[in-house]
Image 1 (cartoon, rainbow, N blue to C red):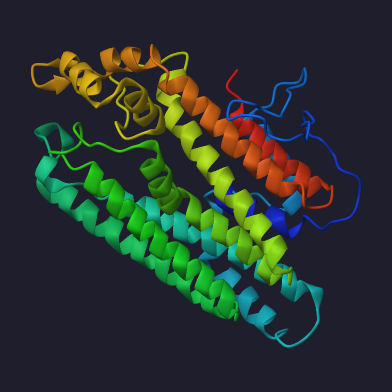
Image 2: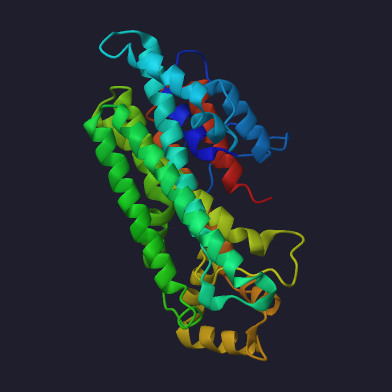
Length: 355
């Protein structure tokens, strides 16, 4: 799903008039009493992620699938963009709408470029089963060039928005992304992967850089393009930040909460549940558990997964995910009730519901 485009277009609709429409359940918008408290109460109708996205797409008026990138780079869309540029300097409402959609697509391009670049393979760690070296080397070249091509298009589109603050926000988000990926790569180096000592505070900082900054600053930029004041922009930033953090923790939790998980399924030893497990357990006992899960020089992920699930890391990560979800909902309270706000709330509910 094109989550980034969707989350970028919905904030622009926050000021829309009309009564709020709860898609599946209504939150009780009280104060947060603890990390583990949760304000969303599920109704009898199950809320599925694709249903949440489908309803939200109806509000923004177009689908947000990855295939829309093909349209973004097509000649036809370029011709449309050229015609829209003729409206620059006028007060036609189409111009404002086209700036908002362009920003959403730019954000999606940057995010996709990062994913493509992350597909680069470490040739020094290749095994014979991975394929011929020359093919893997060629694949790396394609990944680099493709990612750079997407970034170049994003930068070009960003310049066409002609808003220096938006350019500054997205440029700083890109800088954060690079810094976050650098930290991730340095902590997952082969020789330090298992013995790396990272606390939850450091994990949050790195997760924001690599996963939260782009969405947070893009939401803020959307409010800037809509001519909202600094306070509204700050609320949009907070929503994007906490929504992204909640989404990241949800992703980290999947190997530990799925009903059916293959014994060969690996997981990141620097993911949120593992980091929290290590904090509760203590460094020495964690190293001992790692050693007990080693068999013939290889880590038995199935055994280690069960050990982590027996501790407090998984439940604490769920609490942390819901905490960030609550903070995202709290940021939305400053916006008037609308279908867009309800859709943004339900997106939060979709990534914080674990039963």
